[in-house]
Image (cartoon, rainbow, N blue to C red):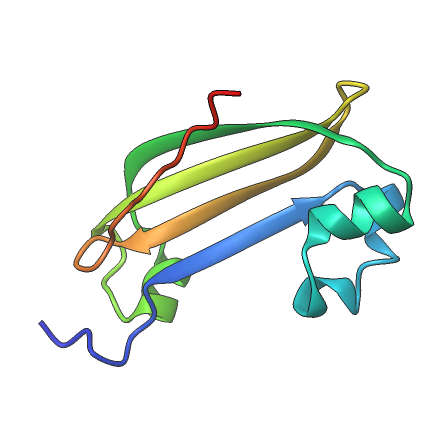
Length: 108
């Protein structure tokens, strides 16, 4: 398996249109959620995550140097404000050859 130089992950992030225009520099320089809470007075309420397996779409396969339809681990996130309105959602495709997950659950 020649995966030494290929990408492990492709992450597609979508954010509600009304907040998108202020994000050009924030996406690469700091935590997106910290920015919303500190600079925009927007309060993140909760994040739903779904883990599943799915065939890799062609565009993600090309990015990770895998054939379309190869198995992949998918993590879908939906981020909601304290008002219940969706702020953002993302879908992350992981290379099945190298994917490892470590999860921490906050009890308090």
